[in-house]
Amino acid sequence: MPEPSVIRDVVARYVEGLASGNAADVAALYAPEATLEDPVGSGVHRGRDAITAFYADVERVRMRTDLLAVRVAGDSAAFHFRVRTELPDGAVEVEPIDVMTFDEDGRITSMRAFWSPEDVHPAA
Image 1 (tube, one colour):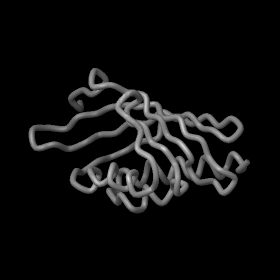
Image 2 (image 1 turned 90 degrees about the horizontal axis):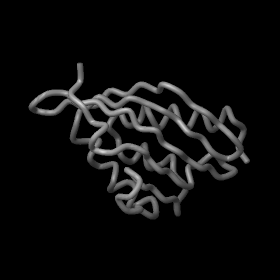
Image 3 (image 1 turned 30 degrees about the vertical axis):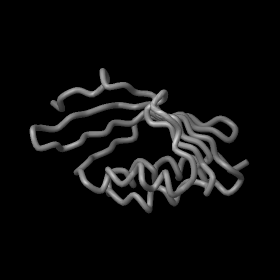
Protein backbone atom coordinates (compact mmCIF):
# COMPACT_ATOMS: atom_id res chain seq x y z
CA MET A 1 0.00 0.00 0.00
CA PRO A 2 1.42 3.44 -0.88
CA GLU A 3 2.14 5.99 1.82
CA PRO A 4 -0.59 8.62 2.32
CA SER A 5 1.84 11.31 1.12
CA VAL A 6 2.24 9.46 -2.20
CA ILE A 7 -1.53 9.27 -2.64
CA ARG A 8 -1.92 12.97 -1.81
CA ASP A 9 0.77 13.83 -4.36
CA VAL A 10 -0.95 11.82 -7.11
CA VAL A 11 -4.28 13.49 -6.32
CA ALA A 12 -2.64 16.92 -6.54
CA ARG A 13 -0.95 16.01 -9.84
CA TYR A 14 -4.28 14.72 -11.17
CA VAL A 15 -6.10 17.98 -10.37
CA GLU A 16 -3.21 20.04 -11.78
CA GLY A 17 -3.11 17.83 -14.88
CA LEU A 18 -6.74 18.54 -15.64
CA ALA A 19 -5.99 22.26 -15.64
CA SER A 20 -2.88 21.87 -17.81
CA GLY A 21 -4.96 20.08 -20.42
CA ASN A 22 -2.69 17.17 -21.27
CA ALA A 23 -4.65 13.92 -21.57
CA ALA A 24 -1.54 11.71 -21.76
CA ASP A 25 -0.11 13.20 -18.56
CA VAL A 26 -3.36 12.62 -16.66
CA ALA A 27 -3.78 9.09 -18.04
CA ALA A 28 -0.16 8.27 -17.08
CA LEU A 29 -1.21 8.53 -13.42
CA TYR A 30 -3.41 5.44 -13.93
CA ALA A 31 -2.35 1.78 -13.81
CA PRO A 32 -2.53 0.07 -17.23
CA GLU A 33 -5.77 -1.81 -16.45
CA ALA A 34 -7.43 0.91 -14.36
CA THR A 35 -11.10 1.88 -14.52
CA LEU A 36 -12.70 5.31 -14.67
CA GLU A 37 -16.37 6.20 -14.13
CA ASP A 38 -17.04 9.94 -14.59
CA PRO A 39 -19.70 10.67 -13.55
CA VAL A 40 -20.85 7.61 -11.65
CA GLY A 41 -23.57 5.87 -13.64
CA SER A 42 -22.29 6.99 -17.04
CA GLY A 43 -20.38 3.83 -17.91
CA VAL A 44 -16.92 2.55 -17.07
CA HIS A 45 -13.81 3.22 -19.17
CA ARG A 46 -11.28 0.38 -18.86
CA GLY A 47 -7.55 0.54 -19.58
CA ARG A 48 -5.16 3.38 -20.21
CA ASP A 49 -6.09 3.82 -23.90
CA ALA A 50 -9.77 4.32 -23.04
CA ILE A 51 -8.80 6.62 -20.17
CA THR A 52 -6.54 8.71 -22.41
CA ALA A 53 -9.39 9.02 -24.93
CA PHE A 54 -11.74 10.11 -22.14
CA TYR A 55 -9.38 12.89 -21.05
CA ALA A 56 -8.82 14.11 -24.62
CA ASP A 57 -11.65 16.61 -24.02
CA VAL A 58 -9.50 18.48 -21.47
CA GLU A 59 -7.15 19.40 -24.32
CA ARG A 60 -9.94 21.27 -26.11
CA VAL A 61 -11.06 23.58 -23.30
CA ARG A 62 -9.48 26.00 -20.89
CA MET A 63 -9.88 24.94 -17.26
CA ARG A 64 -8.84 26.09 -13.84
CA THR A 65 -8.90 23.67 -10.92
CA ASP A 66 -8.67 24.07 -7.17
CA LEU A 67 -8.19 21.17 -4.77
CA LEU A 68 -10.47 21.85 -1.80
CA ALA A 69 -10.09 18.78 0.44
CA VAL A 70 -8.41 15.36 0.40
CA ARG A 71 -8.97 12.41 2.72
CA VAL A 72 -6.77 9.32 2.52
CA ALA A 73 -7.61 5.98 4.11
CA GLY A 74 -5.70 2.80 3.31
CA ASP A 75 -5.20 2.52 -0.44
CA SER A 76 -7.94 5.05 -1.25
CA ALA A 77 -8.58 8.77 -1.40
CA ALA A 78 -11.71 10.87 -1.57
CA PHE A 79 -11.28 14.46 -2.61
CA HIS A 80 -13.35 17.53 -3.35
CA PHE A 81 -12.24 19.99 -5.99
CA ARG A 82 -13.54 22.80 -8.17
CA VAL A 83 -13.34 22.89 -11.95
CA ARG A 84 -13.97 26.13 -13.80
CA THR A 85 -14.34 25.61 -17.54
CA GLU A 86 -14.28 28.48 -20.03
CA LEU A 87 -16.88 27.97 -22.75
CA PRO A 88 -17.74 30.20 -25.72
CA ASP A 89 -20.92 31.43 -24.01
CA GLY A 90 -19.41 31.84 -20.52
CA ALA A 91 -17.66 29.95 -17.77
CA VAL A 92 -19.20 27.13 -15.74
CA GLU A 93 -18.13 25.50 -12.48
CA VAL A 94 -18.64 22.12 -10.90
CA GLU A 95 -17.30 20.72 -7.62
CA PRO A 96 -17.04 16.95 -7.96
CA ILE A 97 -16.07 14.52 -5.26
CA ASP A 98 -13.79 11.84 -6.68
CA VAL A 99 -12.91 8.54 -5.07
CA MET A 100 -9.74 6.76 -6.19
CA THR A 101 -7.96 3.55 -5.28
CA PHE A 102 -4.22 3.08 -5.75
CA ASP A 103 -1.82 0.20 -6.30
CA GLU A 104 1.41 -0.35 -4.35
CA ASP A 105 3.27 1.89 -6.83
CA GLY A 106 0.90 4.81 -6.26
CA ARG A 107 -0.88 4.46 -9.60
CA ILE A 108 -4.64 4.97 -9.78
CA THR A 109 -6.47 1.65 -10.18
CA SER A 110 -9.99 3.06 -10.12
CA MET A 111 -11.63 6.47 -10.17
CA ARG A 112 -15.28 7.29 -9.60
CA ALA A 113 -16.45 10.91 -9.91
CA PHE A 114 -19.55 11.96 -8.00
CA TRP A 115 -21.38 14.83 -9.71
CA SER A 116 -24.35 15.29 -12.00
CA PRO A 117 -25.46 17.88 -14.58
CA GLU A 118 -27.49 19.60 -11.84
CA ASP A 119 -24.19 20.39 -10.09
CA VAL A 120 -22.84 22.42 -13.03
CA HIS A 121 -23.61 26.12 -12.70
CA PRO A 122 -22.53 29.42 -14.26
CA ALA A 123 -19.31 30.69 -12.75
CA ALA A 124 -19.56 33.78 -10.59
